[in-house]
Structure formats: structure tokens, C-alpha cells
Amino acid sequence: MVATYCPSCKAEVHSSDKFCQKCGNPVSAIPDTPAASVSGSAEKVIRSKGNYSGKMKKGKGRKARKIFFIILIIIALGGTGYLIYWFQTDPKATEKLINVVGGIVIMGILFGIGYLTRRKRGSNDDSNWDSDDTNNNDDRD
Image (cartoon, rainbow, N blue to C red; front, side, top):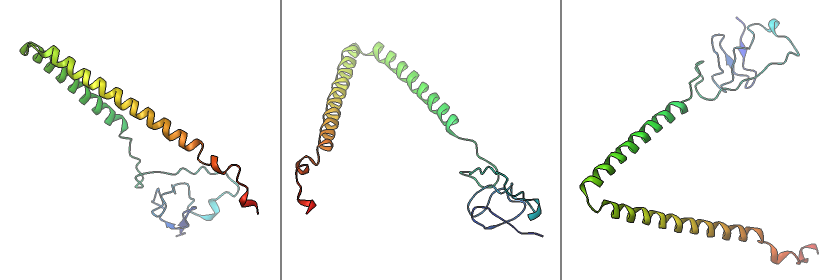
């Protein structure tokens, strides 16, 4: 039996392995015998990220997004139902809702102004950080 080695890390691999146990590179393209190797042939190396057992895991992003949007729709429908119930049972619901929305808008405006002034202040500090040293020639002596 001829031992085979990973082309990347030179670790010994078994003929049944699909990926190197040490570095994770695919080893299915490694020939069983040295005579089967063709010198000068271009091999495409595919690096695998994740499960190295030979089975690639399918991404969870699509399923997670679907669950997120279903939960978002349920929350929106529940909130709408609660607002309808609230407006039917409380005679001052409209006034209270206007006050709450107005407070949220004012907080958003204040946070936006704070963010923009902080951002402008930071960019001005970065742009002229060495303006005092531009005419200083003491380092050339």
C-alpha cells in the first residue's frame, strides 16, 4: 500500500478521506500511486470552510431570514390588532398615540443631531492633526 500525503501540509492521509484531517484541504484529487501523477498539470485547489467530514453543510442564512420575516409579520399583525383594540376601548387613545410618536420623533432628531455633530468633529480632528508640525525643520539636522 502506497502512502499518500496532503499537497499542502504533507500530512499522511488515507485513501478513503475526502479532506485532510490536519489542514482541511480536499484530498480526493490526490492519486493513489505516484505513477498516476501527471507533472505540469494545473490542479484547481478548493479550500473548504466548515465541516471537513466530506459533507458540505448548506447555509442557514436563507432559513434564518425566512423565520425572521415570519416573526416580524406576526409582531406587526399583533401590534395592529392591539392598536385597533386600544382605539375602541380608550377614548383618549389618539391623543396618547400622538404624544408617544411625537416623543419618538423628537428623540430621533436629537440623536441624529448628536451623531452628525460627533461625526463632523471627528473628521475635523483627523484632517489637521499635524498642522503645527508642517513648518518645523528640526528633524533634518
